[in-house]
Amino acid sequence: MKKLSARRRHPLAAVVVLLLALAATGGLYAAFAPADKAQAEETSQSLAIEEGKKLYTVGCASCHGTGGEGTTDGPSLVGVGSAAVDFQVGTGRMPAQQPGAQVPKKKNIYSQAEIDQLAAYVASLGAGPITPTEEQYSPKGADVANGGDLFRTNCAQCHNFTGKGGALTEGKYAPTLVGVSPKHLYEAMQTGPQNMPSFPDGIMGEKEKQDVIAYIETMNDPKKAANPAGFTLGGLGPVTEGLFAWVFGLGALIAAAVWVAAHTAKAKKS
Picture 1 (cartoon, rainbow, N blue to C red):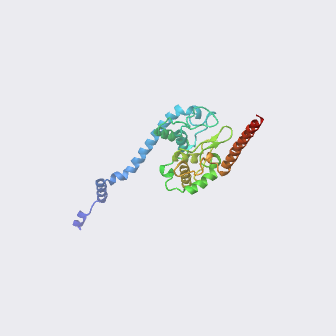
Picture 2: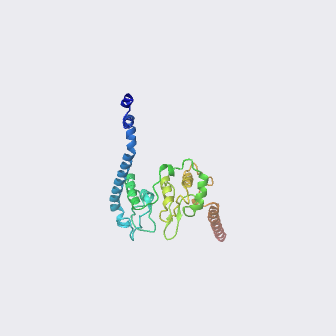
Picture 3: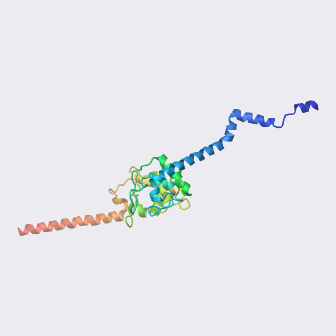
């Protein structure tokens, strides 16, 4: 009995052996790494918010208020989310050059890193739509036909059937969609900039947004969107194009007839 007691291991011996094994295989690091990683991400996010606040103070606060609460010159940014910032600043619409019925697209003055910092700061003011990932907005494998149906139902009234844009009331307009990146198209549907309604996932899901983006890209690709009829005349359809041909074609014929009649009468008199 004494020999068996002497050979009995200490209760903590198994724990020590396990820790040694984990340390040898890197498992000990892996056990504690998630906490370190989360802390690093939190620190990185805090730094981004801090840098974003500096950029915001210089370029945005004069119109949107020192805390994003809004002023008479700019709306509140509380709750607009990072997607709205990425769209507005990424397309050069913000900061705005001057007030007007609508802020036009222009050359962007911020780097993507600075846009991300601005977006992080504005997102910290209140929850809102999050900047999408490439996986979310990529149109690869999307249903172009379904995207066309969705576009004609929800977008064509303002942006034209071929996405060339169109006039609205009081000096406003729906901008052309030619050359707009898939990311910004997705963000526009998410956030509803300026006169555009928003299409959150509850109304138009991620897959449907991808379908719309695929349709717009197909329209903008001359190899995929062939136009055998000739001039598109804005892509308004056969009725409008037929009316154009009728009015201008008939007008030209009438003008030619008047000219011939006038010169014939003049020739007879002489």
